[in-house]
Image 1 (cartoon, rainbow, N blue to C red):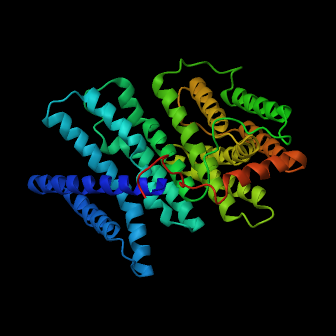
Image 2: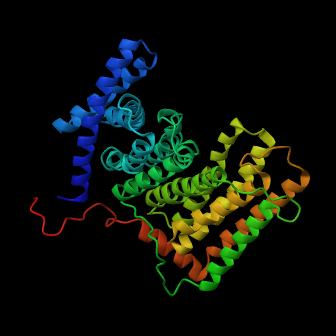
Image 3: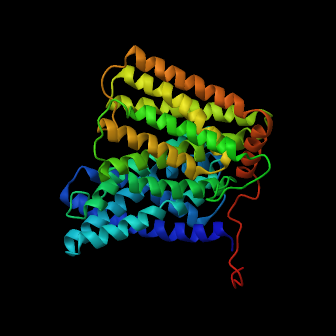
Length: 401
């Protein structure tokens, strides 16, 4: 049995338990005549269809399989979050068990809950557009919806509540989910230790780190601004942005693009540019709490930053480094401003500063495309993409065949 087989066993067991809980929850919601019963009923039908098809494992017509795959990709994560959030709340309220213990166990399981789903349902999607759409959709669900579905209003430690409401716990779960997706999509986890090679220069790495520190210093405006004491909520918000956005755009989106463009000679620069553009476009979501001019300024800055982080990631082969850089920029900026939301109207000086930043990022990007630096980018992109990147391990001395 391979790793994919173990993931499927976990997936079937988890979905079986989820369906049973959904039936019980739906019966209760119908009895209480709550509006949520309609959503729960629709989710139950969708998930039950997918669960039965998975158990039968019979080849269905192509169009039936395609519809079912999208149905499960959309509905199953939502069902998982809702069901286990409701179950956690009911256990605490009906059995009078301590919220601290139940929520701690709930959070620990939430971290890995989406791995079997990613290994089974996520593996069915090979189209690059479908993969990109689902990466964004699952990010919104896994990171943000925990705050809606889980019992954050019940008495519990401050750390647990903040972890759920800021999206920090959801970000960890999303990182685990995307790591699983990358493997079943034949991409790899970049690892935690550098892969040194003659094409890697310590001076280039130091230069990239210094540039990031300068950006961090200027973004926080340390010289003229007043420092707000960073609190836990601010730190968790910055960690959510740093870990979450690097997971989706550098690890996920850039990896998917490199795989899709692997036969293109200029795959590395093209993938880096597209991923940076998507990173910038994603900041349109900030219009929910910001005005248009400041959001456009932020998008322009994100375009350059996306190119810069892509250079750091592909040159060093280390995702944790871009996560740390991203976190420091957001954390110090929030510590100075007292908020992660940008306010006010951008001045001409703001536009000039961002234009200079983007110009520098573009120059660094072009510079990285030559000589040994380009070779390092190509080598790491090749390491991330390949037929060996899959769950093909076996347990040693296993009696299973």
